[in-house]
Picture 1 (tube, helix red, strand yellow):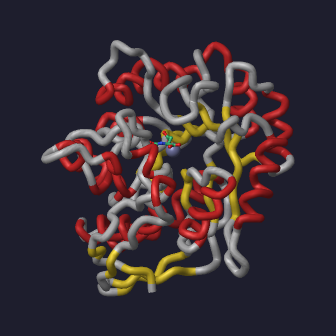
Picture 2 (cartoon, rainbow, N blue to C red):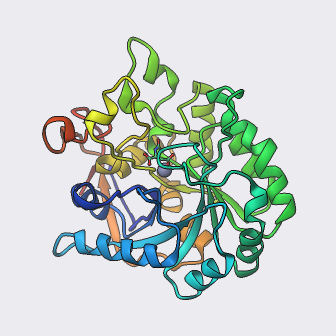
Length: 343
Ligand code: NCD
Ligand code: ZN
């Protein structure tokens, strides 16, 4: 098969940032995806429906003439989020989901949740109204090794939470381990997971052997090859609980090339081309539409997109830096020859 036409996909996990950065990165996402779940970790974070509505307007205002894209907004959960406000935001259609960052787990998460005890009221309401909870699943305990933080989160936090709220709709975001794959497979269907293109394509050797590659540094950190392999099998299996979420997370080069570099990989400019390459390598092109375009809407209870997109087995060279100097953004796979292209 040298050409593949699928329903237009959605990206179920995107960092679009704000202001000038938003204007620079949004066209790459809008060129590939019809809708996207927009992460709320701005400075300051988007913590309620009012802020989400204003952010949504800024995103739509930044969309270039002639391009279509529907931002699906999320609210950033804090220790003091008002459950009634979430309920009203969901009922009005402004909020699609709620994002749980354990406090200090990742970029701009200092205002996140310090203990599940603080958000029980929110979880009860969300369970009752069917509002999805999107989780950055890593513990922040300094005694836990960074490579184990996702697996420990499943045991310590997510397992008990799902036992307390068995009907809660949960997406475990950007999973990176076989532990998470197994955990999702063992639970009922109200738990799903997104998988990034870069976690399917790279492991910690790519990041660390022969020199440290800051553009492969993200959170949760890429793991050993056996975990990467488990993610590849899960994504290409056709199981409806796994779907596409790029976690495209742009940072200026000044933030990446630093003694204390920022976490995040800017994958938007070659996201679909990278995912389809993985499905091709697994002889699973027939499963790609489910992963990219069907499983996500089914989980969120949204209609499938009506448009289509065609991918061709035709190599193209990935673009270089976007912008110049320290404020430039370096895309994932810069300068590489990529075997698939969008027609
Ligand atoms: C994200 C960011 O930069 O906002 N970084 C990342 O490494 N993925 C935050 C996140 O999703 O953890
Ligand atoms: Zn993210």
